[in-house]
Image 1: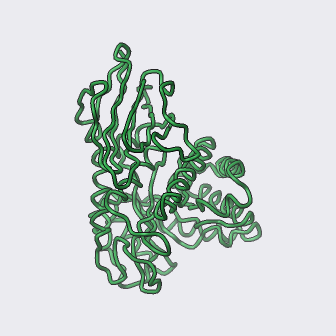
Image 2: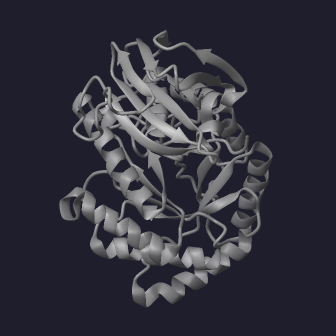
Image 3: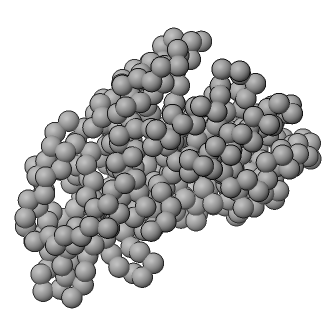
Amino acid sequence: MGKKYPIGGWVYFSMSDENYTIKELDRWAQSGCTVMLAGIVGGSEAETKKTLEFLDRAEELGIGLILDCGCGYYYCDEDKAEQIEEQARKNYERFKGHPALRGFHVGDEPGTQKLMENAIRAIGIQMKIAPELNPYLNMSGDTPWWDFCGTEGLKAYLKKLKEETGCREVCFDNYGQADGDGGVTGYFRTIKAFVDAAEEAGLEPWETPICSAHGTYRPFTEYQYMWQITTSAALGIRGITWFRFYDRIIAPNYHSSPIDEYGNTTLTFERLGRCQKRFNDQFGELITSLKRKKSWLLGFQRMCYPMFGENSHELIKEIVSFERMVISTFEDENGTEYLCLVNAEMEQATSVQVRYDMEKCRLTGLILNGKIESRYRSGRSISLYPGQMAIYRIDKI
């Protein structure tokens, strides 16, 4: 079928760190990662050589790498653009053409109007030099966006980003789901705001959810890691870069990351690895090949998405569930429609029933990315564990 769903995490190590070795890529692959922010690359020959070794191993493992070579938006003022472009071109010449190179890191959370303009300028430079790559910019999922521009300002900014640079992707962080049920409402509202704005601008929205506990953000269960993946993918997120993959001894409040500050894998590593591999094995390639059409919630109003009702879809007449749900429709390149269901509870399993117009369509359940099909009878109960996804093809008669 094709590409796996892009999913991985943030790594802050420098290629100059002798303890940061190529063996880490095997751990990334073991946990099911398919794309990684692979750390900071200085200009020395030794770091270039080491980075190329990382890229070679990443290619063998099917992982795309995003490199931070220091040409981000932070200092990309108009009067320094030529200098940034010269350095960015040198970086590109070091690694260009490598199949595992996905792009260069442009920066994180521009927090002022000036820095947002710098981000557009930096991405424009990257796209001019390497139009085949995908510059990586991660934006704040909350403040300062809502403080000085709101969702309409966000739409205008992403349109400008697309028009002036020609880039294809933009990422945002989203952590409220780790901070109580009110935070879950914020999580859904943030996804809707960014996905709507990105899709309107012609950009693919990526997300940085959370796998590293700190502050008031708690560690998650295995169900809750899957919940973040499935709810995001169902609502139109096209790639995930977790914050963050490693704990560090200089930040003692951070804990329960996939790998601790002593280099040991944690329970999070095991849980997250199962979730990432399960998702790609079941739905990653399929959902990557589809385009989202519309999304709804069921069971609880989060003040963002519409609630699914009897007039929401011409063929799907009713969806009932004891627990909360995320519901989306997708479409493939041939115009065939798909129904995606996600149990939006983090702790409770649920039973769902879908009733459809049996004179006009049939529903076909898909697992293993569509390799296995099964007919779904209208009104039959579907059992879903917390965060579990199910996808059905709508076969018109």
